[in-house]
Amino acid sequence: MNEYLSQALQTVTERNASQSLFLQAVTEVFESLEPILAETPDIEAYSILERIAEPERQIMFRVSWVDDRGRVQVNRGYRVGFSSVLGPYKGGMRFHPTVRLDVIKFLAFEQIFKNSLTGLGIGGGKGGSDFNPRGKSDGEIMRFCQAFMSELYHFLGESTDVPAGDIGVGAREIGYLFGQYKRLTKRFAQGVLTGKQVGLGGSLVRKEATGFGAVYFASEMLATRNESLKGKTCVVSGSGNVAIYCARKIQELGGTVVAMSDSEGSIHDPNGVDLDIVAAIKEVERSRISQYPQRRPGSQFFHGDKVWKFRCDVAFPCATQNELELEDAQQLVDNDCMAVIEGANMPSTPKAIALFREKDLLFAPGKAANAGGVAVSALEMQQNASLQHWTFKKVDQRLQTIMADIHRECVFYSKKYHRPDDYVFGANVGGFIKVAGGMQAYGVI
Ligand code: GLU
Image (cartoon, rainbow, N blue to C red; front, side):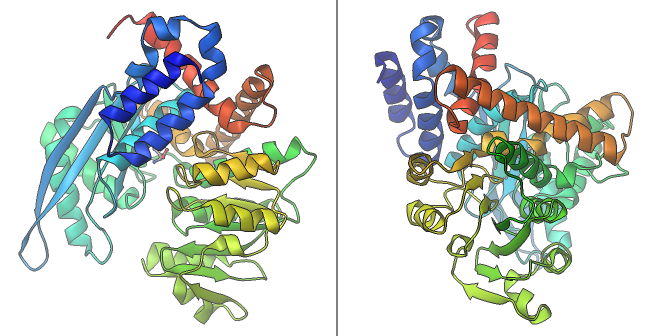
C-alpha cells in the first residue's frame, strides 16, 4: 500500500478507534484511491485524505420530550456536517434505536461521494437520533420532531445545511420538522428541508426516487452485458420506502420480485410480491411484513430469515448497513445470481463485496446506485428556489439522466485505471476527484 495512504488510514483509525462502521466506509474509499495518489502528489501535499476524513462539524444534543403518559423521555440528536466543498451539507436524518455517532459519521462520509457523483452541487451531511418511532403515537412523533428541531434549527439553512429523510423519517416527520422550523425562525424557508409532502413544497418522484434510481442504475449495468430486468427473478431486502419503490420499478420493467423482508424475517411469494399489500401493511398500518401471507395465498413468511436464501437473478439490498454478509453472498453466488445493486447505504460487508468481485458478479455500491434519492432532493431545492413545481415526468426523466450519468462516470474511471466492471472503484474515484479538486481550490480550511 502507498505509504501516505497507509499513514493517513492509521491516523484516521487511531482518531476514531471505536467507530467500526465509519472506519469501514473510510477504508473502502481510501483503498480505491491508491492509483490516483501516485499521479496526483498534491493529494498528499495538501493533506487531502486527513482532511476529508475529519468532519467539518459534529453537533450532538439532548432531545427531551413528553410521551403520551406524561413521562419525560430523553434521546440524543446528531447532525454531522462532513463536507461543504461542493455545496451545503445535504443528507437525511435517521430515527432508529441503533443510531449512534458511528452510524451518522459513516452515513455522512458516504454522502460526500454520493452527492458528488450526482453532479448537483451538494455537500455531505447526515443526522438523526436514537429515538425509536416504532409503536409511538402520532402525537408522540410530533412532539419528538418539535423537540428535535428546537435544538437543531440554528444550524440549518438553504445554503448551510439541508436535511431530509432516511430510515424512520418520511414526509410526516419532515412536515412536523418544517412546521417547527417555521415557527421558531418566522421564515417560510421551504428549501431548508427536502422530502416534504407534495403540495407543500415537496417534489413529485422524491418518495420513489431512491428505489426507482437503483433500478435505473441496474438497467444501465445489466445493459453492459446485454441483459435487462425483463423476465428476471429478483429479491429485495427491506419493505420501507426504498424497497417498495425499487420493487415497483422492477415489476414495471418486467422483472418478478419474489421476496422482501423486515427486521423480523422474510416473505417469499413465487407469483411475485403484491406491492399494494406490502404498502398497505408497512405504510398505512405501520405493521409487520409477517402479516402478508394472511392476505396472499401461496406466499409464506420465514421468521428470522433473510431474502438472500431465495433463488434470484438480481438482488437488491434495500434495508440497512451490513445486512448482506459473506455467507449470504455465497448463497447468492451458489444460486447463480448475476448482479447485486445496493439501494441501502453500505448494506454489503467488505467480505461479501470481495466475493462478488472474485466471482465476477456485477456489483453496484450504494453511493452510486442509491444516489437517486438525494439527487431528487436537490431537484426539490431547485424547484423551491425558483418557486416552480415540475411534473412527475420531468423529474423522473431528470432522475433517469442523472443515474445514467453516474453509471457512465463509474465505468469511465474503472476503465481509465484498468479495473473493468469495478463499480466500487469507479464510484469512489469519481466521487473523490471533484471534492479533492474543490479542497485544493479553496485553500487550507
Ligand atoms: N437519506 C437519503 C440518502 O441516504 C437521502 C438524503 C437526502 O435526500 O438528502 O441519500
